[in-house]
Image (cartoon, rainbow, N blue to C red; front, side):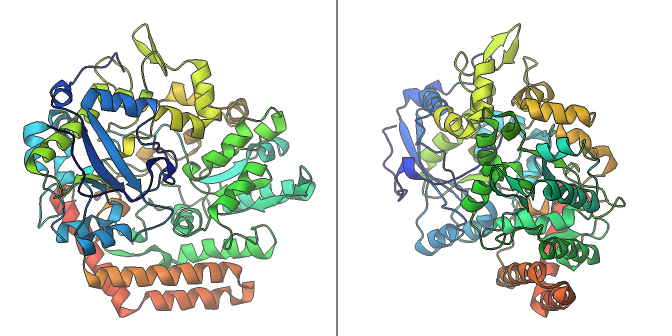
Length: 565
């Protein structure tokens, strides 16, 4: 096939696109795309609803190798910042890229007839994808009423076993060290550690110490401010909802009385001068700048959001500065609750990549073969490990990352990712999760216990040793203590494209993003009035109807997947 002329053009220069966090060889089994290479090079346009500051137009080492093996080049556009309007604009114009990663907007594209049903394409042309999702194909189906496969899930790895914690409540290792590595289990423990260190160290490197700051910029308010309310009160992550595990009824999680007490604690921290006064006015870059200064004692976040700032500390030649990175703790409101970060959700399906009707039938085959090559053993090892001989080597049948490469990966991750592309292609690739081994007995990913421990800085290793742990995950409740989810992770399900749902859901978000900061920043005597006003607004008839619509989606999902009680 001749080089394809794109019908949809990414409007942003390839090398200047902004922010996706990376999720996440020659010795692997071969699954060739030789026939595709021989049929000629081809360019596909692609849009992702995530951002990606590391994208360099496949001119990284992994990207070049993918093109060499498949003949495919991607002309990609990534959403800027928190932009969520692009898919709606596509639907309004009827103009689409060839490949699309729409996150929660899949329903809009389905209703517009913009997505290709991949069922037959996978069956005929994608043996690696069929093999990968063999036991989970039902979870790829769109809905109970429309059992087409429009999206190949790529945000979650098949067979995923997480070996480390990247979230929870973060405390600076220097704080832990000075205080003799105290137990950090409850909000009271966490607060006490911050207070004690702050009292002794009002400044760090000549600047005022920041006891705790949160990232509340745009949609990240969910990650840093509101999600921790359910995490600290014993729930797994189901986005904005609490789902009754017996009845499958959904409601906004803020309505739970215990969550009110979590936000009351943030209000207390603010009024005592322990929560950064700029928390709700600072932008992400300001938040990251504070982290990289080493003067933030605590934050509540996911490591992917602040890792870039931490890398500046890790790369310092000063031992104390290196110790100003964070450890992760399963902090809850009180000891009666357990952090559910590692609850087993099974394969959650959900967000991923699809093909649009912009493609001809011939091009659809070429595109699915491209995705299938990425799902092959050869493709999996390439996107996760890099190029053999450059980024890893094989010793006695085991893939090994040389120490100099690991040090760059740990301490200079942004530049390393742009240069190599390692980990950057997993969100567009069907992929196996951590803990899954290939036919050679090697892990598909680089996230396994030995490698994780090797990647820790010395201060992290020292702190973990004091807590009798080898990884941060060792401090968290184990999966077998937490039960399983019948519906996967609700935040990963496509949002119902029903105006009764979408309008009311947006209304609920507007309410929460106004009232939660207002409650936290209020004087203690006004906290209850503000929070109760929010609850009254969230109990409007349209929001209750929205909750009913989502409850039905959960019930339908459980029935489709065959996971009900």
